[in-house]
Image 1 (cartoon, one colour):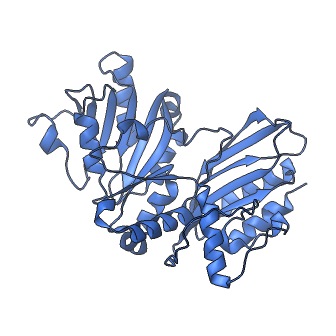
Image 2 (image 1 turned 120 degrees about the vertical axis):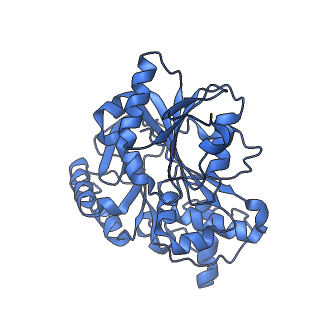
Image 3 (image 1 turned 90 degrees about the vertical axis):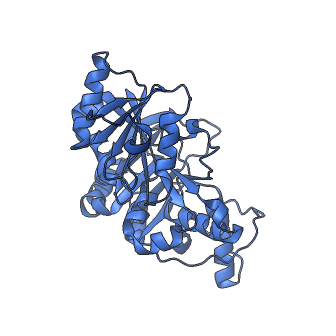
Amino acid sequence: MIPVTILTGFLGSGKTTLLKRILNEKHGMKIAVIENEFGEENIDNEILVQDSNEQIIQMSNGCICCTIRGDLARVLSDLAAKKTAGELDFERVVIETTGLANPGPVAQTFFMDNEIADEFLLDAIITLVDAKHANHQLDEHEVVQRQVGFADRLFVTKSDLVDEATLDDLRHRLLHMNPRAAIKVVNFGEADIKEIFDLRGFNLNSKLEIDPDFLAEDEHAHDHAHDHDHGHDHDHANCDHDHGQCDHEGHDHGHAHHHHAHHDDKIKSFVFRSDRPFDPNKLEDFLGGILQIYGERLLRYKGVLYMKGVDRKVVFQGVHQMMGSDLAAKWQPVEKKNSKMVFIGIELPQDLIEDGLSACLA
């Protein structure tokens, strides 16, 4: 299986700079880069052989660059066929979407097309966010919110052009939209290219990454808004849902308190947690119904579940209506059995989903 990384981000966020590094640098990796020819800056002009009509061009550092002049699935099939025939040698694929593209359909290609699914493994979606223009772009363009919502990792670029408070506000905003994506401030002149690979963002493993600071920052926002301490002796199922998830530990995280700007983003996330086991049949029926009705509005969702009568963790994740689940490791005697699920989507009915999930508990 050939791992694939999808690179996305709005116009001017730095995708071309990063791709040039991949295609020029002596990194020792054999990478095929699929570039959409509607990109804001055509890479071919500067770093490829000029008079070439070929769709697939070999680079001097062992990389390959090809342009999408049609269907992505066909380009991938061509690459796979040439690799099998020994005509091309590459170990992984990077796909650059255009700055105006929704990465959802690109990701779905790897689930819907059996031939592609047999050859390629979607590793991760990486979204580049321009620190200077991000807040305005997120306000103006829903596609930018989608790019953030789909991400497994967020690279914040051009951070040298903003002050620390602006950067902190942006990070807080991105966390609310997608708490499962690690946020990294990068300078592509120095960043390690290896950091974009093997993130296993689409793997069904039992590790559910949610930024731990997501809890802490929300606690502080809650304190500021209501001018009282958020009590921790309440029933976990009855968290104040306005702040997404509760910090059940009650620790003081020692973060500086900031007044974050309020952004009414269409794309938001929330986390559901419970120490009680799910009834498998009820949960399957409920999730099936939710996907049928709200599938198009669900960008990414993932969970590690405690199921009644099952001695293993059940992991699931999906994109839109396509969901996969699997049995993971056994619950260890020292582990506290619980479920945690994160949903990222467009104007999702949070209360309805949370109430429905609570009703599926055994």
